[in-house]
Amino acid sequence: MKKINFIVFFAVLLWSSGTLYGQSSALESDSTLFETQRQLVNDLLEERSRKFGEYDKSLEQRTGIFGLFKSKADMQKSINILQAIVINDNKIFIETRKLLDIKDTEKARFQTLAREFDTQVSAYMKTVSKLQMENEKLKTQIADLEDGEHNSNRIFYVIGLLFIGLLGVIYTLWMKLRAQKN
Image (cartoon, rainbow, N blue to C red; front, side):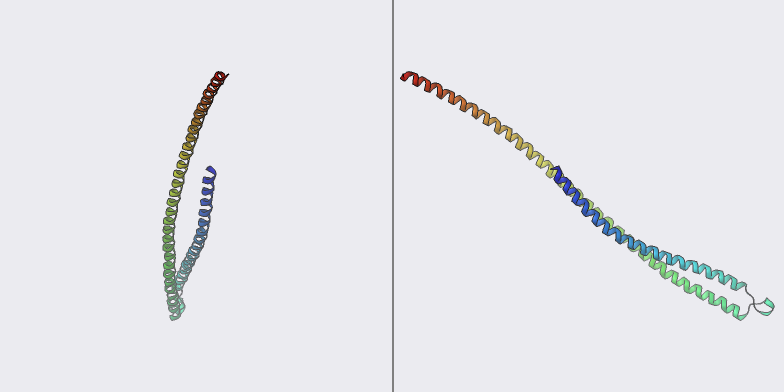
């Protein structure tokens, strides 16, 4: 009986480890996607900081008359840098939204996995409980059979003694009849 319980336990363990391995590889690919997206957002933020540094330098540049005034080209360069910063900010917003969507998707997936694992654990617990009840029932049946075997042995001994006693009585009667005939 213990061997059967061990085999069932081992089979359930193998099945669940295979299920978890398949799900963990999917989780790793999602985590990789999340990390890649996060790195992209970080790169865009670094580029934004670099462009702001360029913008600060362009504000200080004065290539106008005697270096005292800003020329039209200096102003246009500053405007172009600001436009590049705005375009970069729009990319940051879009990529951040994608990052948040990935995070929300992962959160939903983790919640789904948690529910599935909870369901599986509940099913395993029910199975183990059912097997324990079956084991107890079988132990009770074995005990009943052993008691029944002892009872049938007692009956066999009683019948055997009665048979021997009956043979003894028959033998004594036969001896008496034989003694009377002689």
